[in-house]
Picture 1 (tube, rainbow, N blue to C red):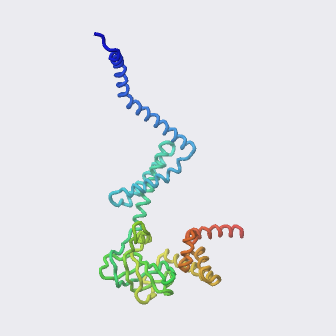
Picture 2 (picture 1 turned 90 degrees about the vertical axis):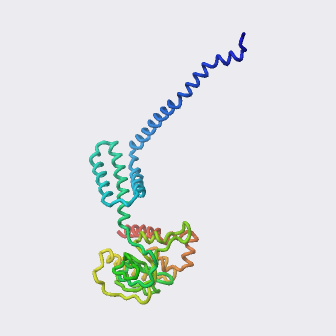
Picture 3 (picture 1 turned 120 degrees about the vertical axis):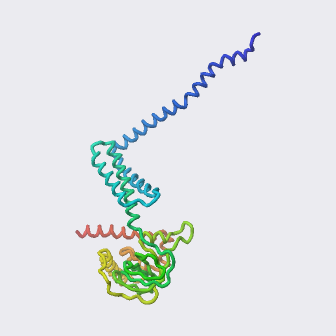
Length: 321
């Protein structure tokens, strides 16, 4: 009995369909293999183009940042000597492999990453300090005044603690920031004795807000508060360090320049001029300060003002020379 024409057409196409199915079953590995080969060739071409033009150097800071990221992935605090040994080993490898271009580039990236890891470890070790866990209401403080800020209503000083006595105090702090009455802040470098009420650094007031505690931690300030009673300037039991003497000299120069500017330009004009030259912004009135920030030029009072003075000083001395 003869088969229908449609059935014969389907039967005749089965071998072709089976071959097509086998081909489709085979193509993914071959296509992926070709894709991998093409991608590898493209990456080698890109790398050759980067190396040929001498553009591999900008990858060093990327590797440095990668090393810092590795520090934050550690389960526990890495030892300072481990970062130093790793950095020294990678540096020796860079010197030994300097005549082999490809290996030298890889060694340089590894050395930059080890530098980032060592820098993060050293930074953590350098700023580690105690932080006040709870408020203390009657603390006896003795130490050197490191910085002094003149504010609109009160003054504020940072004390490098030499001696600290208080009930329920487990570990003495290194630095504290204390608010004092207006006009009573002692000069920088003075050894002072006072009583104070101290509180832990203030946490952010709202989610995503400014973190006062983080800012104070990186300044190695473990508590803040206000003075109780008078501040006594006493003879220091030991001589202050070189850094404190340098800070006292610099603060004296800043105060002299600030006094001269305000004598010539009274009011907010002198305060703004002093902020641009000496960095002392605390004497600017609140409404002028808010107006500058609302208008978008508040950054001029901070680091940009310092940059302006540096550029002006370079031009001034160059022309005078």
